Length: 342
Image (tube, rainbow, N blue to C red; front, side):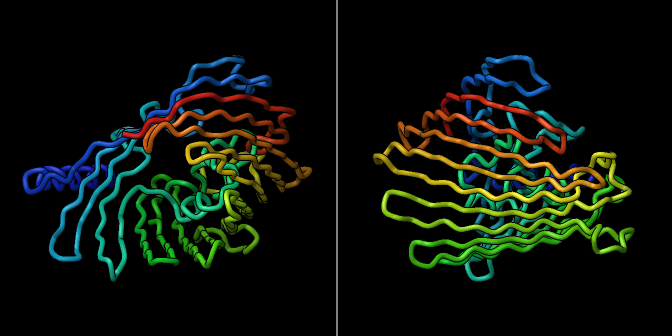
C-alpha cells in the first residue's frame, strides 16, 4: 500500500514537471553477454548461457528534477530491472522508487525504496568492481541479498551530504509488521586525503522481541582505495551478525549467524580506454551449532571502453566454499559481454 501511494505521488510530480520543464528523462543500462561455467551452480545444469546481467543488472528508469528556487530542488527516481528475478505485486520498480529534496548547503533527503548505506559504501572499495556478482562469496555490503537493511532498503528515509573530500550517509528504515521487516538504522562515511580514500559503515536492526545482545543483527564494513600511478589498490572488510529473528519468514534451521569477508584487489589502467582487474576474497561463515565454513573467490578480467557509455568486458572467476550456508565444492566460469548505458 505504501509503495502504491509513493508511486502515485512520484507520477504526479513527473506529470507536473513535464508540463513545467523538460528535465524528466528515461535512462537505463543493458548488459548482454555469454557465460560459460566449468562447474555450474546446482540450480542450473547448463554450462553455456546467453544471458543478461553477467556483470551489471540490466535496468531502465525514469527520473526528473525541478528547481523550486535558487539552491532548492525536488526530484524522483523510478528504476526496475529489465529481467527481474523477484517481482512483488503492484510494482515493477524493484530497484529504486523514491522522492527527494536537495540543497547544496543542507544536503539531500530521499524517501522510499533505495540503495542501502552499506551497499553505497561497499561500492567504493569493492576490490573486483563486480560487487553485484556474489557467486559463492557474499559481497562486502554485508550479508545475504535483501537481509536486514542490505543492498536495498524499503520505506527508508536517507540523508546524504557531499563535500569535496567528505561523503556522509545515514538512513532509517521504518518497521513493517505485516512483512516482518524490523526497523533498521545505518550510518556511513568516506573521506579522501591525497591519493587515499577511507570508507566505513554500520547498520543495526532493531527487533523489540530480541533482548539478548548476541542475537541482535548488525552489519559493519570498512575499506580503502589508494592510487599509485596507473594502479589502484582496494581493500575491504565486512562483518555481519544476522542474529536469529523469530518473526522472520526467511528463518531456517541452517540460518547463518555470522559472515566475515575480506577482499584485496588491484586495478591497472593499461591505456586510457583499457583497464585490468584482479581480486581475491576470503569468507568465513559462522553458524549455529554447525561447523564453520570458509569460502574463497578469485577474479581476473578487464574492460575495453569504446566510449563513455559503452564498454566490453571479459573476466574469469573461481570460487569454492559455501553459498548461503550450503557447501559448494567449485564454481568456475568465464563471462564475455557488452554494457551500454543510455
